[in-house]
Length: 442
Image (cartoon, rainbow, N blue to C red):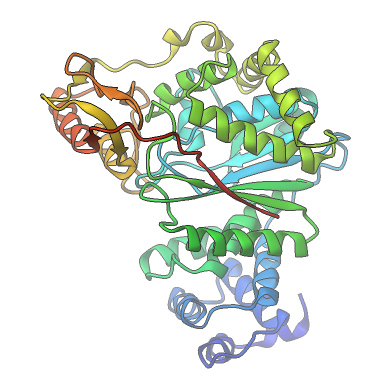
């Protein structure tokens, strides 16, 4: 940190951004240092966040902010691992369990996958919550354990440690209560400061948009993806972003243990078509960035082969065992927690082709059941959720459930079943297949 960064007063930096000036690197460093050492009060940080929200940041400012936030804590050194190290980050959605099969598949193709993930909040599910539904699975590894497992097993899926980009933790909490969440520069810095501190060589982003996503429109998703790709590249990390739709839930299961079951189906090659489509697409870009495939066709072949030969399935069991979980879950998913009550959601006389399934409504149903969090301190019930979801383009039969609700409490189950039923729309004409994949930004 420079002497100038130490002597700058918070109000000076806030005023310059308030007035629309481009901040110097030293000013951004002072802001981030003040966040972590406590020399900037919450009200000063909040004023700064609002100034950034209203005035925006140039690409150079965003790079400087990301770098300063990344360096506010420990930056992992994984250079002792000879394999290329590539991670994937998703902006979150409903039924998004892709990190689980993807890590196993990509690791089986010879790429190291150091994956630091988050918990669910609001309508989006968290990778850590899904993993913790596996009996014994431990996400709180030390850095040494994390590095050793990536080197030995080829992948580790862990939670964020307190010394990883600590500036982000304080700023994120303030953004949440000061109406400054929806800011491209702040979102970019928040995501990349943590991802690039993992010690990775390259990154693939899954930027989702639609009713069940954080970004609602294609245009907003493009803007965020372009920002993250450009900033990561400027910091020396080759990065690509896939834009994928999230108007409908991804797959047929939403809920922690239920999504682990679906993960195992994917590793057997029996997963829902939309889950397999996006998982393979992300895996292809990870292998391309790692330099282990000559072209996308080669990369796709490698991923398909490790699934067909059972190698990806075995790798997932190895990851589970390495992190203290019961690897028998891969052979016997009944080991996973199960809900006391299962309610079939019937079409109630409605018939025809499913034309829409509202991802947001399905997510709200799982929140009613206790599968997600309304506040960060809330606990989750690993057993509950919604499974066997009929998807767009399938026929609704009066005798066939639209979905199954898994509940610990029958009253919550009935309320969730009504919400699930309301998510469905029907028509006389069968809708054609629509790809989840919209655009690749590199």
